[in-house]
Length: 244
Image (cartoon, rainbow, N blue to C red; front, side, top):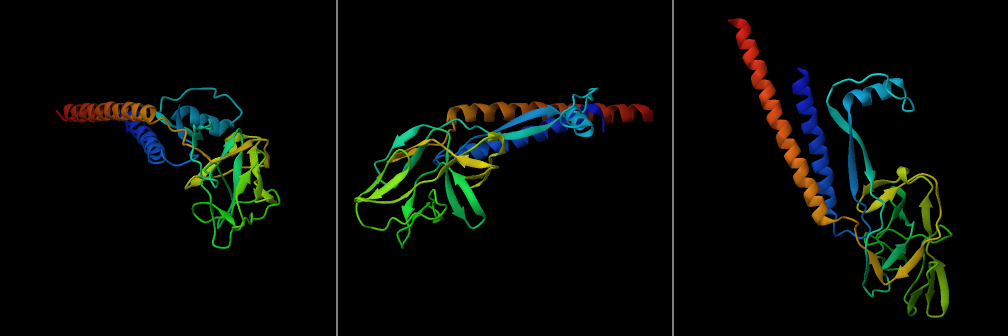
């Protein structure tokens, strides 16, 4: 394959990866607490040389071998807060995540549209137990008005029944999505974030911005496709010329 063909094909593939990421962001634009994904690119030659020489070393040469996806990362900026008035809606104001027990293990989320299970435990919309600072589900029951302080302490009537656990990650780059608004990460530690009752944090997806990114990615894909076609035509013409 010629360099021109490879460059065009690699550009098409990376733009398709970008389109997939943007489509995921748009599909979750109404998911509370969702964090948008971003894609960055790097030349394939630089990626190859960094891998061969070690991630901490600078490449000693440059290879004109197209482009590849460098990494996918989370946009960790906080989304807008929306008042709902629902006493079981919660938002984290600051750097923090709610802790949830899922069938796959402990997961973290910013979507605080919680509910009560049939036995009175605080659960997510999917029915997963929300954990307190003691690492256990929070039993609320149906014994009176629910009030939650900024430190996450939950009072039902006049009785304190638990405290919401919130954590942060020393290295935000370890946070990765695992689906349905849940995330995983390394070395969680207690967070000092405030909890806002009766609020939901909206997705930090800016729909208009995502649509502009989508349009740009599609245009770049189209240009790469045209370049691929042109390189194929040139190659075919050269092959036919050599036969004469």
